[in-house]
Image (tube, rainbow, N blue to C red; front, side):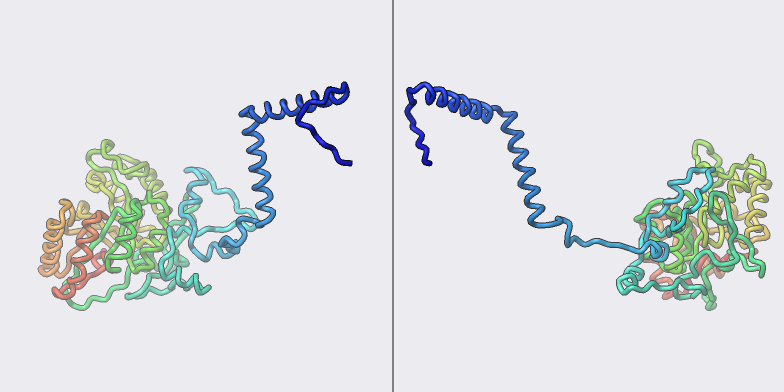
Length: 393
């Protein structure tokens, strides 16, 4: 049945009432539409409805995005996980929670080298070396028989049953060729990722690197340094003459400490990582002058099979452990010309005495000048050697 609506009002009683009701309804709808709050709500509803329809038509928006899934049992072998995770979860003095079934021991490497990345692309992982090489990576640490459980879940160096020591096993192999020897220790590594990586990757492997014990991801940095052929020292913070105004940190070896307290601090420091062949001092102008303090320190290192290489402040100290002291600090003055001058004097000392040992800090200018200096050293009749080659009992 066709219905015709007239634009003119009908004057019969029923039609008139119906017309008034229709007019009132249209007026209410128009009034509601004019309300800004109702209009906004309606627009939002329509938007969500349209979005839902779009998802239904196109499918999962993440479908086709690159996803990476790694089997859990492979994480520990890829050695590409964030460093310092265990230390962040376990506070000082606390015991590590027991591993749950399926839990993993994550690697501490700060990043993967280019070679490791290439191996990962081919689905293979290069096995770490087990025997030291004069030209390639040093053996992965720890080496069996040379460590035991230490405080805080770490490990401590020990002398192996067959008499092997960390000072021997973790040092870089060296064969003298009869020319005067020059060695250099670059310290303060691990605190600045950029300079640490530059020292590891751009300096010759004969350069010895020393690391701060408080560095985040310390084991990862040491592993990386050894994979590039560098032997490693661990820095022991020692009391300077202006302590506590100049405070090397909470585990500083204090001259007035009881021997057992010094050993306790040393064991914490030594348990921070593995793969170092000896300790070196960080500051310590007061500590190294104390016979009692240095005797405790030296005997603790002897019991652990470690060497001690210092920056020159302990040059008058001997002891029944492999020892060497730097002849000069090359970057007391932070200028390229001054550093070059100190390196030339180091060469002159080696030419006169047969060998010389220098010490520097991981400043960008130091790393750059040492890199340039080392490149021409052989042509000047000198042999670059690791610091361990200078050590003697």
